[in-house]
Image 1: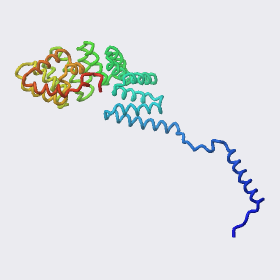
Image 2: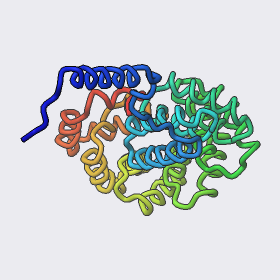
Image 3: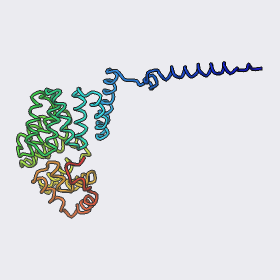
Image 4: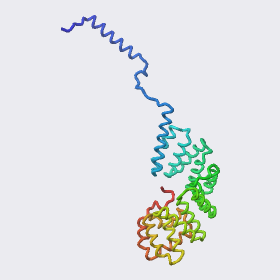
Length: 302
């Protein structure tokens, strides 16, 4: 049989229990807060670098907005690392967040003013913002630090086209293609300059060279068609065939404003417009006009 509690014994037991509760409640309040892990600096740095690598992978895949979100986490974890700010600026630039890209670049330049990549990115930003003269200054400053950057010479050529310096633009594009093998965009733009200068034969040669590297590229295909059309009736059938191929690949090239956004000069655009008037091309041109997107009319769209 279970033991029986006497009243004094019961009171003593209850008193002991109450005192025990008082002792527990008198402990410091923090003893009752769940343990929170605080990562060490090295762990934060490692996490930041890991996120930066993921952001760079997304950027290479063309997912610029997602890359920008990850890069923003990187600079929170590594605020004094200029590489993170550069990565963020590049992602913002590619996703058309121009104002934010400017802020990120300013921070990167503050941390590492002798990094040529920062000057090159600033030049690209100025070019996108419609400030070619500012872009030229930034790009040339970067090229003093890194004379072998093909992309910087390409941007420099584009900026010089915009201010009408065709000879200097051609020189920059040729320098770009000499520094990077198969840099078809630079060779393509050599053709743009040469055609406007009246050197149709050499422009044709450059565009044919581009199509050996990038057979499905719409821009050099259409530009070649226009230059062949300008070169005489003997090339008419090839020009017609090339137009169909180009507009099926990228119908926005049927729009004069889109051509202008791609730095096509007035001579090439007017020649292309005349080519589009051929009766044989009416179904092709009509189909391209139906499929051209409104976004194709604005150069600031991604």
